[in-house]
Image 1 (cartoon, one colour):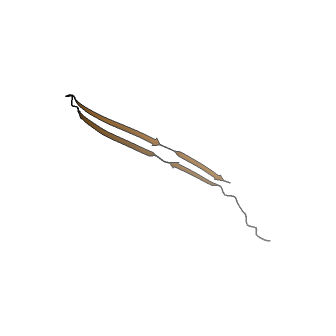
Image 2 (cartoon, rainbow, N blue to C red; image 1 turned 120 degrees about the vertical axis):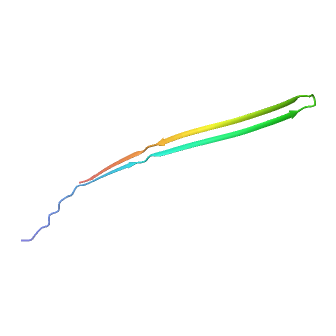
Image 3 (cartoon, rainbow, N blue to C red; image 1 turned 180 degrees about the vertical axis):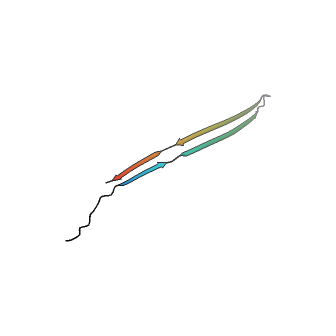
Length: 73
């Protein structure tokens, strides 16, 4: 009699959960001041003040989810 080894298939179950939370806050402030003084001979005085302010707020929320379910039978 010869002994024969038994090969049994084993189940392998792998579950991979990947949660990535990315919060990106971007704030851009732009200030520009323009001052112009103009004097003419006609006794005309002109003064111009120009102020420009630009506020940019960007909120970016990324929440990708990756589910990998692998079964080997």
